[in-house]
Amino acid sequence: MIDGRAMQESLLMNVDAESAVLSDAPRREARAAAPARRALLMCAPDYFGVDYIINPWMENQIGQAALPRAKAQWENLRGKLAAHSDIAFVAPTPGLPDMVFTANAGLAIGDTAVVSRFNAKERRPEERLFCEWFEAQGYSIAPWPENVPFEGAGDALLDHARDIVWCGYGWRSGEAAPKHLEKIFGRRAVALRLVDPRFYHLDTCFCPLSGGWLMYYPDAFDIASREAIRAIAPAEKRIEVGEKDALAFACNAVEVAGRVFLNACSDDLRSRLTDAGFTPVVTPLSEFMKAGGAAKCLTLQLPGAASAVTPQG
Image 1 (cartoon, one colour):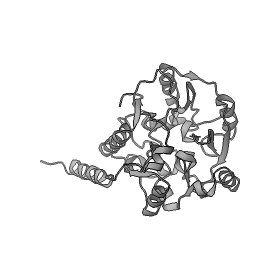
Image 2 (cartoon, rainbow, N blue to C red):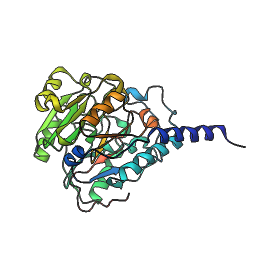
Image 3 (cartoon, rainbow, N blue to C red):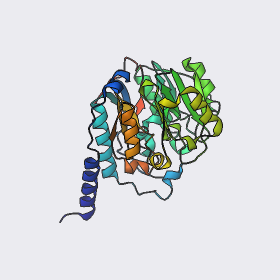
Image 4 (spheres, one colour):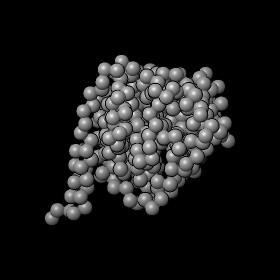
């Protein structure tokens, strides 16, 4: 007998795969602007699920994530990224369903890493595991004050073109986080206050791209932060997305070699990204959206990765 639920999952996975078929050949301008091949950290979704509520996306979603579909979506993203990136993996751990969101492991630049200090108690057991992974790869772990919450590259995004760190605060990371990052990494950290609880991490509403481009949702920020963004990034380099794309986590994207991997993309946004020289590649991640994450959340960039980091996929 054919299991009806299994058949439904199979059909859903096929729909995801079909909807993700887009040309991923980047335009010449984006190729020229993009940095060298990147290293990324990922964690298999073996124990992924929505087991508690720590952000608005998780409301009414406990037990609703379909693991077979989540695994297929994650594998689709991993495969597409592996064609253009070096990928390392941290082992998943039972009882830690959000460990799959490796963007929150910490912030690593060169051979130095800051391990996250999670605001949500449910995720604090991840800290030791991520610290052990960084240490095993040869990173120097920078000290971080216990009383300052900081959720890694969920709230701290490196802008390669400007050599600055954009740092969100207000929901998960503390207001003091930017000044500590400046001291550790010797780079300017631009503080951006998040005001919409749906966009609880900076990477849910803000995405630095190659060549000085920025893709972001202005209404996620307070007025002062919007002004700061506009003062640093000229109008011709800003791609301001509307609420529909923002709620589809279009800004929670991973850019590699001119390709922008994202959960969903309206025709208008696709056109604007293409005009800027980028190639949007849709990788549906509906199951992870139930937990408040998409492509960027599922990856941690390791710029200037420590020499001991061994790519595995």
